[in-house]
Image 1 (cartoon, rainbow, N blue to C red):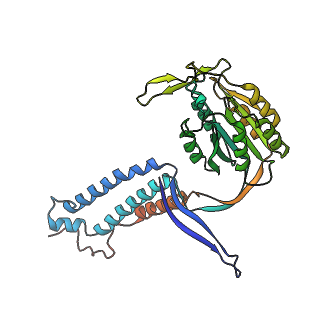
Image 2 (cartoon, rainbow, N blue to C red):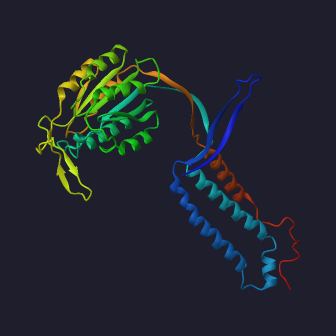
Length: 366
């Protein structure tokens, strides 16, 4: 449960270099389910209010005798006593829910690398020798990799016969996984597997000159139709960039399924009408990884294929990508706990006697 508002902190200077730091002011609860206790408390308050209006103390007693018995009793103070105890319960429930109020600003150095995924979306990635398909398996493994990133920037390239920057470098991992989930083999009409084009687009994705902290992960079944990828990998390696490659598929290969408009399934054929079997080409992917000083792994039907590449990325030297202001919640339950105790003590210690007691004029009333 979160409530949002905004505030600005302004640091003034006498020169034009003045700047403003904006942050979000938020309230969050560690245990929001405890706030549901306000429902029975509200019902208790309503019930008590209704009953206090309908009933009087000692209703069956003679008015004159009741006045004598209660001449030292202050009903108004008694009601305030109950109100204070009730307010104490309200503050206690709020404190127990663990409110975190306000924003604490602290400078944080974010360290990491720039990581670009180049994903093959050619029709051969629909082959099902890896379940549920080569492309779906790749998306799942990459999603698991993104979940484990901490401070690294990530980008996504899609390629087939040509390549396109699909998601620029970002630290928004939720957005990256959302974009990743939408990838399919219909994104690029020009079919083929242009690994060299993917590498060129990947190199252009890095916005800074220092290549020491840059990683490209090429995910494909390896059916290269151009043949310049190894030379590009060597050039990138010479600049300090790391290129890892991932082969998706099996060495035995698989037919390439095609789904019609009505869901009717068929398989891709060549010009002579023969069925096409797509076989993963590990050789070129290994050569690209070797030329790029990276690691080659295979995405197959085994779980957690991504761990080898993640271990290589984690072992890299990280740089400070950006110094920024990090905001976090501060626990504020202490104030409400003290308030609850104070109200409870005030209610317990509040006297119910009248300020001015009538003088006792005799033990018996005639």
